[in-house]
Amino acid sequence: MEGYVAIFVSFVGIMSIFVEVSKIKLNPWGMLFEYIGRRLNQDVKKELDSIHGELKRQGEYLREIEMTVDMNEIKRIRAEIFAFADSCKMGEKHTEEAFLHIIDIHEDYEELIEKYGMTNGRISMDYDYIMGVYQECVKKKVF
Image 1 (tube, rainbow, N blue to C red):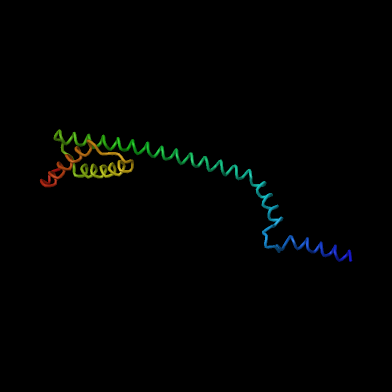
Image 2: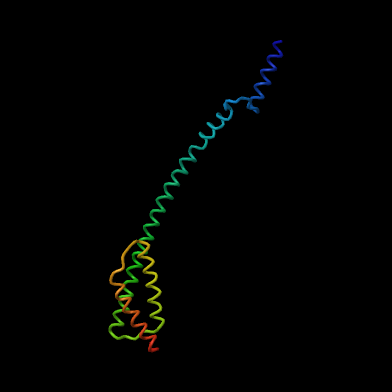
């Protein structure tokens, strides 16, 4: 009889590896493998956390660079529009292409100041003046 009990216990032990027969979700092998997996992967997890932090810092740095570039572009466009308006006020003649270029960069300027919630000051007055000169040139067909 002892032989049958030993065989039965051995059979149940072997089957417990492959079959889960309980309403209570208790899987000792699953818990063991999960523990081993966590231990084996803890260095990888630390490295991934480190990489995630570095990527976040890089993203912030790139946003700062983007803002710096945009602010420099705003200043450049403003200077170009002011210079063009001044040259128009001095009576200097410009080609239609030069006027169209100012119109294009003014659109870029408007997009940039809207992106950063800025207001448009003196540029509006000078741009309106440039557009008046441009409309006169178009009417008279003189560039």
